[in-house]
Length: 95
Image 1: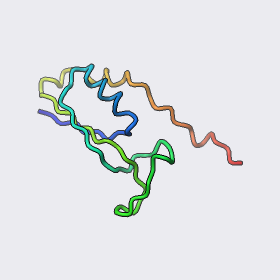
Image 2 (image 1 turned 90 degrees about the vertical axis):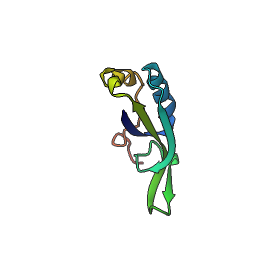
Image 3 (image 1 turned 45 degrees about the horizontal axis):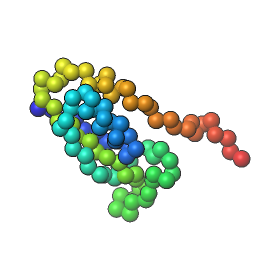
Image 4 (image 1 turned 30 degrees about the vertical axis):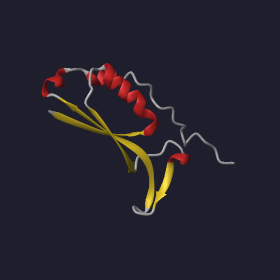
C-alpha cells in the first residue's frame, strides 16, 4: 500500500476530490492544517502567534492506494483541473 500526501489551498480541494474519484480513488483523508503555502490573496493570510509568522489555512490530503494502482495514470486525470489564475505581482504598477 502507498500513501500520497499533498497540502493544498482550501479552494482547490473540491476539484481535487472530484478528479480523484473520477480516477477511481476512494481512500482519501482530509485534515485542516495551518501552513506556509504562498497565499493567493491577503485575505487568506493570518499571523500565528505560536509560529511567529504568517500562515494560511490549508488542507492536508492523504490518498491511500494499493501497489497495483501504481500502473493507473491518475496524474493524467488530475491535469484536467483548471489552473488557478494568479495575478502577476511584477505586472502591477505602483501609484
